[in-house]
Length: 398
Image 1: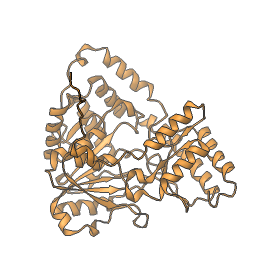
Image 2: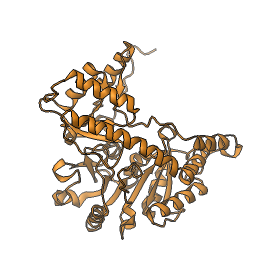
Image 3: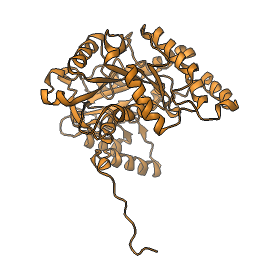
Image 4: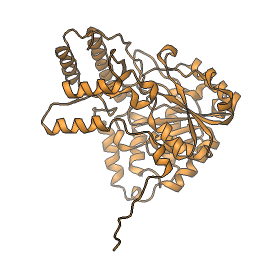
């Protein structure tokens, strides 16, 4: 027996990761629930609407078929890739080669995390939107790349100022993440923005990875375009999609990457060394969702839009000046004067038993904002608004 316990220290890669800024809020949330408090969780981006029955039934039938019990193909079932091709052409008018330009993923998060390993050498720069999904940064750091922040500012309508990126950064930049409809700001992008981004990528020989996880979560008649609709985009871009939000399948872990054939092959090589594909029954369920899920999606969007309208109007009545978002199921809200985003989130939790997400959890440029998710029933959103109103009857200072 050893007298001294062996200590396993985190690697340099892990030490570079930003601290988990939600730890204190999560801890307090658990404490309040343990005390019997009625906590309204408006923080998590996880649909409360259940997965549709027809998708569950497709999974159930496929799970009973012994041919689906073996290792899946790394590049996904041909039937699933063909379903993605058909959905993509119908939705965006873009033709994809199912054998070379489509790669099923164990959720788009997995693809985002693995992509830097496929395309970045140590010391290469990755351009990352801030505020933004934390995996853009962590995936870059795991690949020993250098993250360079592109601020998403309200004055720029939450688009990156590509012209402001210094020449010496661009010289070493190999990858750029974009995300529209955007988490957390809920901004949507039109084709004009993607045209500029594609031209920028061609000029500087940079790969764009467009995170389109919320492509189908849009309102008021807005339809989010694909970056691949832009001429020349396939030469410089891949796009990552998720079935999680679209079909209420977050726990199922299924998505796909499409676009540049060479990059898709590189990502497939990384994946073939790290996973053994997606359980085939889930691929069959995903195929069913893409083929038959449009009506369910429209019904779900109607529910989210009603929640959005209720929350936005309720916050406006309490003195907040906010626009109704055209995409995602998030509302991005300015923090009242006198608070940091973390202080406000703790205040909401401790005094009102409401969980919201502080903006600084998405990067330094998220400071001054907080995010509310529309993944709670209208009755719970109304209860949250009522708590805010009762707690702060004059609400000019909250």
